Image (cartoon, rainbow, N blue to C red; front, side):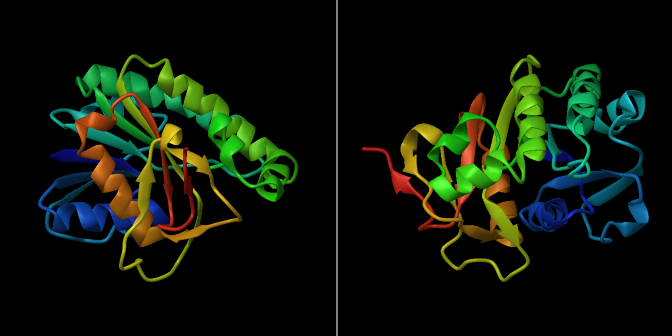
Length: 217
């Protein structure tokens, strides 16, 4: 596949890029600072901002999918709501129907499966951030594209888990107990599995630790 990555300099996007090219895919890293993208065989860098529809459409021409792994400042309650429609417009102009958005567990109704303490945290301390995420998720769902939305739990810089990540549709999950924390590497591997799987089109997907979920009964 040829995959355009928005957020290729970020914690998840950079690891996704490395894993994708190791798996034999081509990556177009569309970034404000392309010099910050690791120079790897199979990676083409293009300078541009996510909100520049024309530039992104040109970079995405001939691609099979777009990964959106960006987020605004915590204090900005409208960044993704303003930016995502420009990204989806670029995808439509480029003729790319497949798009995967990295959201966060805590946004929207998937958060109802979180522990009581986590829900309190998501609604209060992190309320503005997650309301913005939820609003942009709804925009993605109404885009008319072949979307998938990923909901990773808390992420950290650590070695990948030997057993990998649990990648589950919300209806498979009864509860996400505690505050599970997943390595960036493992999250990126799970996202790669999803973006290459057409069976996940139109789905919202939880990505957590192998033990960080309880199955629906």
